[in-house]
Length: 260
Image (cartoon, rainbow, N blue to C red; front, side, top):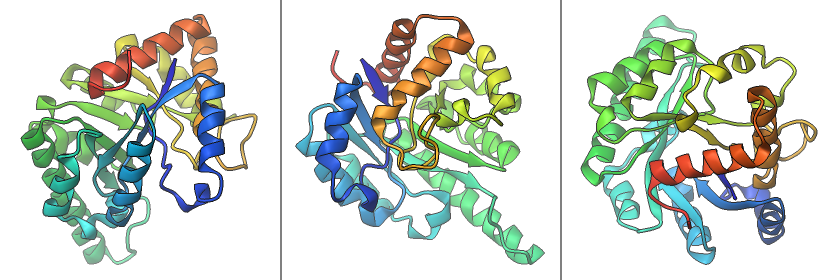
């Protein structure tokens, strides 16, 4: 069994063939999928997909690009659903900041405040976080530690290979490994992979984005989690079945969901 801990099945690119995509996932051993919340306007769609399919769950949150959408009342309504098993994706993304220094400072502070709200929300509902970090390692780690995120833990989605973040494994955080690991320019992630505690590894796709080799350039989908698992096994000199079991067991422990 493989669990894809991060796939945007609510993306419009699956509107025409979602059933086929899910059948292909199952045919490739992917029997559990978590849909992260990125845009608050898509949460209803994610909820509907989760309820129509066994062993598919969703999360409620807003991507840092959409931080102005944050509405705690709406998120809490979704988090009451038994199939809503996490808060996020949330976090910090400084990749596309304004050029003006004052505007840049304001944007960073706004993202941090919304990130803090996600953490407090997660603590109040006792559900783990799905954390997005891009070009913001120091601030992300600080916000997580200063705001008691250890209480709920979570996953560093699309782990960016920063050794600075590895110590968060001691604070209840797992590391989401996706298709980037298969890229030719993923040298840093390849080098740091063996430093991640085995009991803190989970697999993901971030579908429809970051498609792994050999399908890079095409739409990603949960079935391709298999290529991620196979690459992890190759680099760690483990059997593929061992990595399947390991990452699935870790996902079940973190999210307290998915069939046995």
